[in-house]
Length: 458
Ligand SMILES: O=C(O)CC[C@@H](O)C(=O)O
Ligand SMILES: [Zn+2]
Image (tube, rainbow, N blue to C red):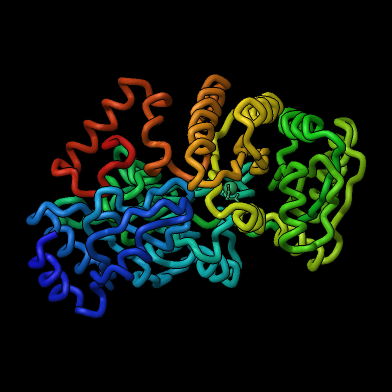
């Protein structure tokens, strides 16, 4: 990159927010996929005007820009595979408004998800999306990757809460897309185009989010199984029965043991699988729901069902759930994590096929995830330095994508496409869908400045 770009960037945002030393660039070269692609320079703008000026400058010098929040991503969306500018958005971290009268929040892109959730709770309302990385991830990143989380089964994923947004387009102009209020709908919902767009179409700077009522009561249950197949069957039976719990999380035996080893919370380590189920609603409604949940679990072979009775017990179970990723990371820091998602009725088949794939390629795979949403997280505990093993991993991943698509599913339920899944995107979109995506990218970003190498620019 030309030195002149760095000089001008320093002038635009202040020298302390422009970093081009190798040690800085390395720190911003990876996300939770742990494959490193260093940017040429790291820039931390403080407001939308600075972002617009940076984008214009990048256009003049033809330098790629990759936006980055907290980089907790598991598909590589925020890593600059073609170098250029890593645009770190964490200084835009104001919660501008929580408008309880209209049930809309206005936040800057770099607000930490959990900080936002806490502020909404304090205001007496509820923002349901709850990605496991909420304590670290940013709202802008959640939207760029369309994050989900355990509550997706009942409440939907980030997409379902995005009303509109302010965006810096690739030519440096600033535009408001979508709606500010739930009931607005003037023309197509262009804002939706940006959800899951991984910073390839514009830089999201401000977001309007929908808020809902806080459920007054909840109940948390842990169902224990001696067979993973029974647990998987419970998931599809539960959904088919019409009772939609707030969460319906599955963990296989390897997952249970990994978490227990990491956190020691008293999970049943001899179980072949557990389901972590929560129901919410009015105090009266949850009693009925919990009874039904217990009935379905028992019919499908649960050997034990525990009810978490104190807030501490509930917290412990959720701590355990949120610890799965780090616990598996402790077993193998360079693990490969997937989120291919299938129709919920296909969960038993998907679980079976995943185990066959692990056996066929002789790989250690843990299976967990938001089963109630059809979204499983097979994690392959592979070592990126073992080339022979990595070849088997690549084949296994390709096969699991094929299976998910064959079953009517998708490559990604919540982690996005990133550089990891970009080579497979066309399998899902088909040739025509891919061409449409490419054409949209070309119209909005003719120079290909924003996050090149991702999605349709693969
Ligand atoms: O590490 C993973 O595979 C999943 C991360 C996250 O989506 C979760 O559900 O915990
Ligand atoms: Zn997840």
